[in-house]
Length: 358
Image (cartoon, rainbow, N blue to C red; front, side, top):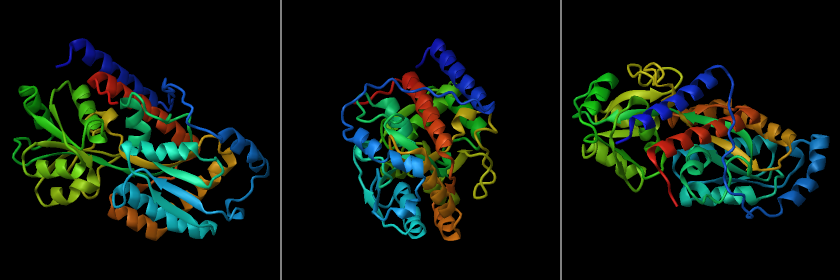
């Protein structure tokens, strides 16, 4: 159980952050991570491409192939997002865009490779809420710096989240759920794909902002966790809508809240966290595009513009919609501020719930 002082301090910090965001004043906090020596060759690469910033050369003028590195295995939402834009980007820019999956260490294997590449626009990486929000908050010895080691380009898509429960849990809506959990502290459990995963962090965030206590049950992967929730072995799960939606529609799970700017067309009866006055839980998951630190701003903007144009393509929109994903295309500065916000938010959750991984 957490002390009253813990609850008060954490809720105050989240309230301040939410108020700051509502007023359009994004506070950027750089994580105090130990500087590492893994990045070699970046300074010479930056110097060799300094002329690019002066000339504003078109991306299409460079015919060298582009490597798009994905931090997770093929078949998942991150991989599908990357594949959805890789082909159209190649066609638009008339350069080969090769997708390479680099799973391992919660995305760290991929991000280290991206960070160590030359900032010449030929190596890009798909960043996620895991790699550029959760990992910096929970890992003691993360071998990359989520802010300083990368050039933010754009948020590609947003992925709404959902709180689901097994139908046998005697809670028809969110208010009943909170009363049920508060009535028996620690006796209600929630599953996650593992310690320090997004699902774990979302669960701890809800606990912190509702002054409730649930027992965390970590699994080795999302498939096993979701299967046990559907089977009723663990009653609560924090997921992306796309993964749980078929089970919600089939009546195997009950949705209580979603993290999105408005109610979803596919779940019109389910309120957003914002409607429930839980603004800090209303941020969805996301996938974005990053490059090594030192990429000229003009090049980053051209990559962003190319991605934004691709996201307007009907075929790409249809493919993403099938996965429950919403195209974004934010500007580089906006995406950079978003990464800073996520790292800061997840660090507060990590400190509050005492989540630390090696």
